[in-house]
Structure formats: C-alpha cells, structure tokens
Length: 308
Image 1 (cartoon, rainbow, N blue to C red):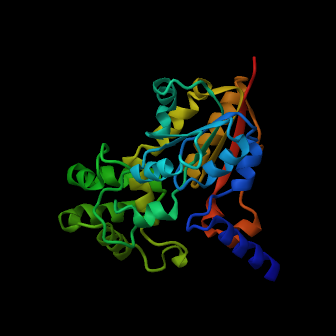
Image 2 (cartoon, rainbow, N blue to C red):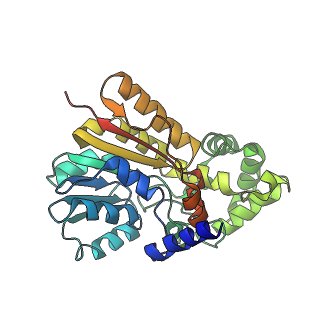
Image 3 (cartoon, one colour):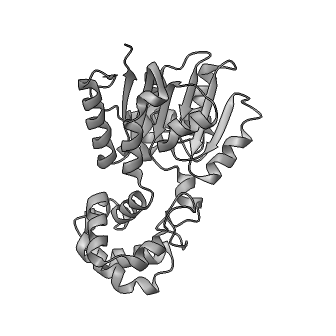
C-alpha cells in the first residue's frame, strides 16, 4: 500500500495541477501519435492529453485543439507560445468537419475525445455545474444555448421528469421534477436547486455514495448541451475527419455515452469502415484510481479507420 500511495503522490506532483488527465497512458498508447502527424483534441479542457500528444508529434506535427468552453480556449491560446504547432478553436467537436474546412486543414491522423469534466470546469465555471456553489442556473458551456433557468421557465413537470429519467437514469425522477417545477420561481442558484432535490429523495439515497443531486444535474447538463446528439453526430462523420489508418479514442464517464460509442463502433466495424482496437473498454488501473478518484467511472474505447 505504501508503494501505491507513493505512485499516486508522484502522479499528482508530475501533473502540477488540480486536473489529472484520465487514462492518459492508455489513450496515448492506443492513439500512437508519431512525429509529424496531425492530431485533433476535440475536448481540450485543461490540455493534459493535448500536451502528451504534442510531445509525441513533435515540432513537425500539428494539433488542433477544440473546446466549446471559452475559458478552455483562452488556456489553449496561452500555450501557443510554447507549442507553435498548436491551433485553437472555440467550437463543438460535433462540427469538426466544418472546422477543418474553415481552417483549410486536411483530415487528421488521430482524434481524442475526453467526454468528462475537469474539476476546474465544475468548480470554477460560474455557470451552475456545481451543486455545491451558489451559481446562476445556466449549466451550458457557452451563451448560445438555452440556459437551465430558461428551460425551467417553459417546461412542464412531465417533460422535466422525462429528461431526468432518460439522461440521468434517476429512479426518483417524478418526485424531483414535481418539487423543482413547484418551486421554480424561487430557485435562483445551483445550490438552491440541489437542496430541493436532496429534500425530496429518501435520506438513505445511494447510502450517501453520491450526492442526491448528481444524476439530476448530469441529466440537465446532457440535455441542455445536446451531449449525446453531438457524440452521435461525430461518430457518423469519422471518415470526414480522419484519414484511412487514422485512430480515434473516446473516454466516456457514464453508461449512456459508453453505450453510444460501443454500438456505433460495432455498427461501423460490421460495415467494414473501422477496426475496433479495444474488445472491452479500457478502465483505470488501481494505481490511477488511488491518485485520481474521478477516473473510477472512465471507459476508453478506440478504433482505426480502415484503408480501402
């Protein structure tokens, strides 16, 4: 145990930041970036995976870093001075084929999507993602999408129940939706919303394994940002984004995302368009779990575009 704790502490010191990229070693091994290649990080975030790719492709390679979050792109641009071959784009990864055309870029040799949240995005966004903070009810990555406050002002109890049940897989969706709609005029912050949820579910909820508002917040975030639609869209256009022989690695954090990736890969493989590199999803090692608990739910699947 002492050795494992030492490894975990070393991981934290090496990263030098609050956010530790999940399944970093495994993702890089599957993507296999080579000197001079063109890669895309479709979910730049804090740049942990991107930095590892940049080190592999070298100064003759090129990396397109995409993120919907303005703060992530500000962070990206600050790193251009260090990595001159880094291109930053504030957009949704679902629009990658359009981004490549607008920036006059060829198809890529590799694509990484980390569908999770960094701790910074959750705790410091100021957009209501955290149920521990008094933040406005926005819960979107940018200002072009409908905010949570706007959604609650127009939605019915039945519609809200459906969203929470479908995207959060929440067993108490009915009573949660009813409580939210009943008190929606008095809900001003994410913390107030979380308290309402916590007050209507049983006290023994999940034996305190997760916060009672976790699944509801997840459902609202997924719905408002069209996360599952975006994932499906990019999976339907991989050949517009990647060269033959190009690799894609996707890290998901909940069953809905993983199911979409799994079924899409299976369908594309059956049609002969891709070859799956991961028979089963890759999960975090015991050492990584010790150093980074958020990797607990991460699943990595990868594939390669077939050559014809």
